[in-house]
Length: 186
Length: 191
Image 1 (cartoon, rainbow over the protein chains, first blue to last red):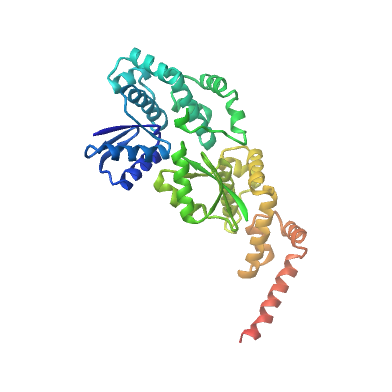
Image 2 (cartoon, rainbow over the protein chains, first blue to last red):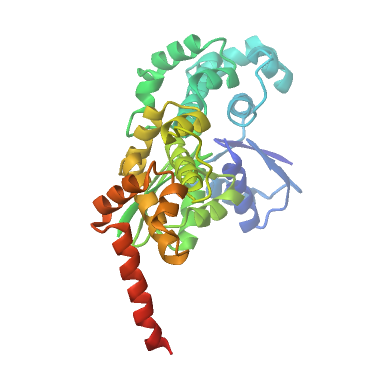
């Protein structure tokens, strides 16, 4: 039995969900971003207890199909940008079509109508957040960051960064308060 | 109590903050401030980064070392290597040139970065290091002043003596004499 969870973005989110499942004595097959597979179907009251437990740590159980699809789009983008070190070689639209088995035009309209931003814009925001994270680490140069995140050039990255944050990358680097945003709040 | 700042790699959301808070809580430190990527702890004595690293690693985090602190460590290592007393000084040796070559940056940026991180100038650090090394060699290895001056790359015994006097107020020869007196004075007390 699959359950769909909103707001999961990283390894710690997965750990936190596992912890809750164990605490409530619910056996699971596996947990991944946005998804729990339970060993057996839970009762109605078990489900509501789990739902409350998850809300307490900032997650949400999703039941309708549309929000599941939207969440799946988000976790696909988050995984692509924050959790893999592969080069970006596939177009985002093609990747989403492949992962979700749905037409991109449909996905795009659905996402915009639920979230109020387009998929492209959402992906840009996630990418900029990743750039901010990498800038804070001060391990890679801006050029290397641009490469890693699939920007065609440093200029492109700089422009986009400035447009979204209002700061240049080096201004951001010198900020005392970095104001990074939790990924699930983007 | 002193505030100690650590940078953590891999934090991206509220659950990450929660996980770090829990792990640090188990170590018994007081958290002054915790946000994505940054942890400020309040503790009377300096906290071992190693300890935090061990606690954070299973959660998928790691502690960040700034480029500056990595560079500072590399510089200190280089100073220790050059002024170990066993370094073969080439003709017209300059530490600045060697450092720029080894660390692949201009000496200016190396020394700027060092003084910002260490709170003293690199020149000053090197002199202090050489003087204390000289003392060590004279006391423990009973080396002669001229030998020490040579092993630590001073251009002449006179130059070494002058610098030694400038920093300790004593001449090297006088320093060895009082050290020896101290040691012989202690001997009867031991037996």
